[in-house]
Image (cartoon, rainbow, N blue to C red):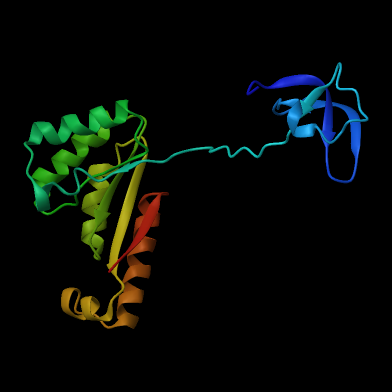
Length: 193
């Protein structure tokens, strides 16, 4: 009874029953329509409309390499091989850790960016233009680059981590996003709290 069929169908509603040529969604047992005793079911499909939910896409963002400095450590080679494997698995976004040691991290980002073909490579930038320039120079070889702007939304974190009042923080975020947009068409703002 679960197979889709097409042809003449009986579409039943509480108000009326009508014969019409249509696609039949699901064939159900005749016992469901036992109240329709005056209609012959010979040569008819019995249909019961079902609602189907179709998912267009599932997007996966992997943050394994972004967490390496906090939770565990990987060798340079492992930091290059993991994104290659994730790209083969068609992960939508591979998030890398930002630049903290300019030469080493820039080389790592360049190496990953040049090998990834299908996934988006996302790298966070600090709230200064030098970080945007350094990150973009390392990331620009990627087929799908993305710059990420992280900023605190808590007034306490704004003052103690960034030494800025909320108004100054908004201006800094605006300035950095504009600087990122000049370099890259894909910029992501992430409100951190």
